[in-house]
Length: 278
Image 1 (cartoon, rainbow, N blue to C red):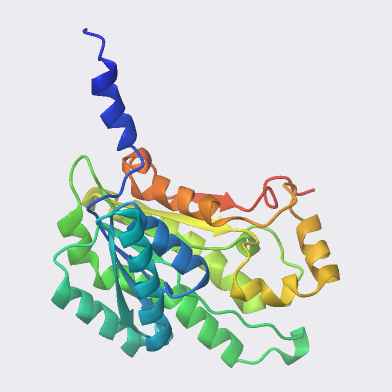
Image 2: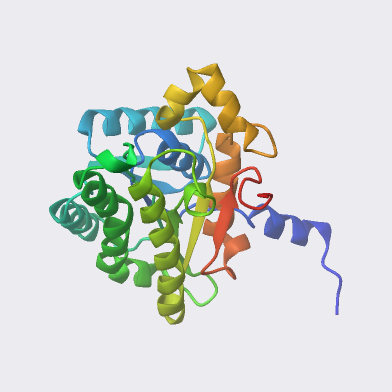
């Protein structure tokens, strides 16, 4: 067997984590973790559709991402679509739009989420229904309703990808009284495994990332209180918040050629919280 030359090996290595030319959908992509993911994919040359309940914020984020792409000279673009995924009507509206405007979806990132905190004896029913609908029910139906587009993207050597954003709170018991949130994310992890088994024969991989504390709007109140922040970071063996590069790197791995042989797994992107417990 001939040994490949450096000029032959380098292009293959350069494309190992590339998503250039792929079409992606990132729900909850107007801020926080979703915006980080969308920006990272666009800067690598993907066309990314982001969704958000708030139309103005969604449009502003897309414009900012596109400006960054122009400055970087990449071909990636971001398209905003307003959609409230806490309701069945919102899920149907989004998937109808995707069916009308796209012929295939290479990467579906189920990131949109909701949380609710309240003392145990005061935890309201709406705190369960809203959180479960957004975090668990919507991702399931987004997958089932976009299956034709995911199947259109699947190739024998390049599966379509579903990436669900779970949580460390589904892997390690949280300190907060966010009962419905941790339960919904644990359910999402199980649905990830179940769908992975079901869709493998369709050439679609299904994986999840379980982030630990990443400094976003959701943790703004924590960062504002030094005592609470210290308590939070004391749980993290690596002693810091997750960074955008940590998150984007994990998504790029799962979405690119590098991650094509992985399905049904939950990646704990949590600085060691779940793996070093005890």
